[in-house]
Length: 255
Image (cartoon, rainbow, N blue to C red; front, side):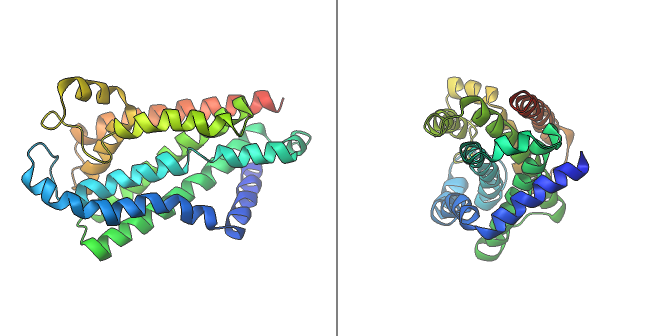
């Protein structure tokens, strides 16, 4: 299976390097938020009670890294739909390639793309805005974004194979991603000091809010169990469930 995964990974890597436009497009949204929205938060963080510990860049940069995975990896199902429409998926069905390897080769490639984009964002925050974060925290945040990308990419492929519609797929994704974004605290942290009780309670149901909090904690150098336990458990559970869903869908669709 490792050899089959490598073959799929190499194919997607070659396609990605031949057309890097999508990589640039995917990172544009978090880059614009960092450059155009981040400076607005500096005084807001200093003068508004209820924000988490840290300065504006220690609060905003790790949240944008989650946004990279959230939006970049959630739309990878488009590429699978294109392969489905052009018959590539059908041709893969007649090969002896492991069905699970089809998924793993793709999601590992998606995870590497998310890590590279996150690293570029962090470097820009360091150079242009004086981000201060420990090296260990930054490395751990890249591990988190890799797992998150695997989770969302697996779900995206599974959803694309279920829908098989290039019209319904983006509409459904937008309907799902927008509330997830607003309730995750990526743009403005949702804390008891800032949000009304009902909004804070709903945000606790959103698993991505716990991942964002873990990312903010490691950027502050806080590696305690209180900071990492809930976010880590939620992320690992989501990753396992998403890979199982994706693998089951690939096996069923290619049986």
